[in-house]
Length: 432
Image (tube, rainbow, N blue to C red; front, side, top):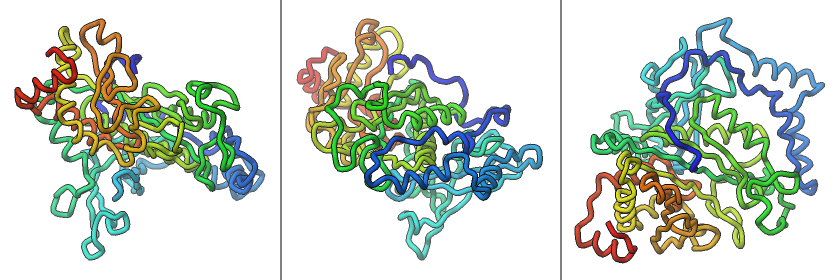
């Protein structure tokens, strides 16, 4: 994340007026997504994918492609808005479409909507209505034109946030004057694993078997080292089209695993952009016939897990003398280690073992350039005496609204007792 220097200047909730000039991701673009699967047990799904993802002599498929790729802008001012929200598990994404009478530039121009919460595990059947509040909009890379993706949060008809609405609490923290004055920046590294659809085994792996030891796959190139690059590249371009502040991508240590980075983003924007980027990735893997997994340890044994390392800084950390502010933040984080771990993703105990570039889930640690610590500080930050810290504890399935707001709360709003601070400083060998 060192290559990320400054946040985007575009206000994340707005849509640029020339969005109709860019090209959507048409059906024919998926022809290159034919992935090399092990022939055993996968021929059926591969054949099915080829029928729908490549140019076909079948006239029905061709007619459907033409309809999917229709540009509506010359014929109507109406647009399609895809309302997106987080489901009952806290990690699943749901969406549905509605027609809006004209193009919009801000979520305040969109109507609220509702859905059946009893079908998503978020409401009882006898009182099932959940209300969607539009909060951020992005250009739709699948439909193109003036069509949009809408990130929503969820409320009862009385206007109370439902339990799975973590955005509401995060927004309260980020609008706190003390937090807002510190202009918190986030750079989030989202790791994920691609699985073969029918067998739920990593892409590129022999079914029921294992590839060679880890080593050649990280940032690797070649048919025997890189599995799913077209999905990663398609996602990269789709995010840029949508207006997501994606800043890079790379193949990961475990084959079939990838990472992309979003940021620096300011405050609540970080969560909105990560959730929208996840939705786009779900849609791309859906079209490619591949399963997206955010499990923090999809394969047990001597294989790396999947995290969501969160790079974080405040205005005070980025200014001269900021390293002292960073050390004070590390003290606070050490004292609330259990609180953060409990909020950093399900199944994280399988990943944070002290091996495979992780710290033990039971022990807080920090270090300069040490990827085996809970908190890593970069060499350049130490040299310059200012910069950022990297929290390496969050799992790949973490909720970015929770993680980003908790970091701000712990390091800006929360004050430990002087006695607790002194004991923590001594334990961590921090002179603050």
